[in-house]
Length: 274
Image 1 (spheres, rainbow, N blue to C red):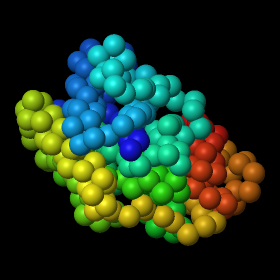
Image 2 (image 1 turned 45 degrees about the vertical axis):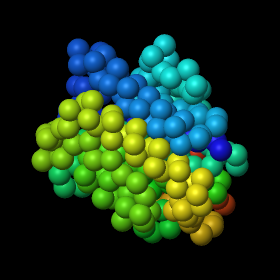
Image 3 (image 1 turned 90 degrees about the vertical axis):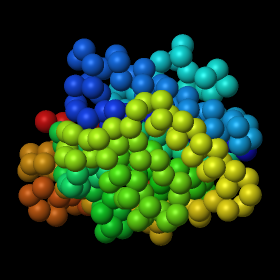
Image 4 (image 1 turned 45 degrees about the horizontal axis):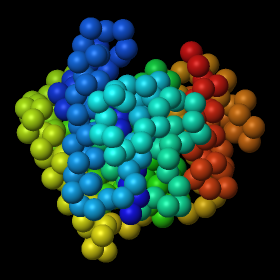
């Protein structure tokens, strides 16, 4: 039973502001250690429940946040941000289930720590098949293409609520109660990581017992609509082959399946570089 652990940073235990997740700031080194510990807690839980191969994808910013030397040696790490599946690098037809660790709510959410969708500097909103999505939905849809259900999400209460509203009764771990975009009441790190470990074990056992949620699948072809923060970004992104400029800030294109939608979305965001 192969498990993919996809890790982001804004939803990690204790994180409440951009300094803590931005390389070059004094707080970043502290929180990349906590991020590694949150992921290790998920790895330990998955192993307790009988997981076989465990692959971790470092999905924050440049993809080089997790400390390999401190990572549980029973897991392999996909690092760097140029891989085609980015936040989900390692997903394939052999993946039995996915754990999302340290995830955040979509752009525009209320009481959500560092809410955004893929790029806080470029993307205002994302729709897949005309349904508003954040990174939880985007990544869950790619998992679904490979018949892999998202089993668990950790993050603040708004991210966990978004996950449950979209994916049904998955296991969630609320590590902090957001009181604003840059504030939250945080659990002690030891407690949040204990909860992550127990939740990961529960989620993987549900998969083993045939009680896991269904994979999240979208009908194909996939219509991707992206609203950028300003018109110049949309103008630049509309150069993507097959993209149509809908209005000042929105483009839209069709992709034959989620892997193509996922990589084309990344390309559109890259073209929209400010």
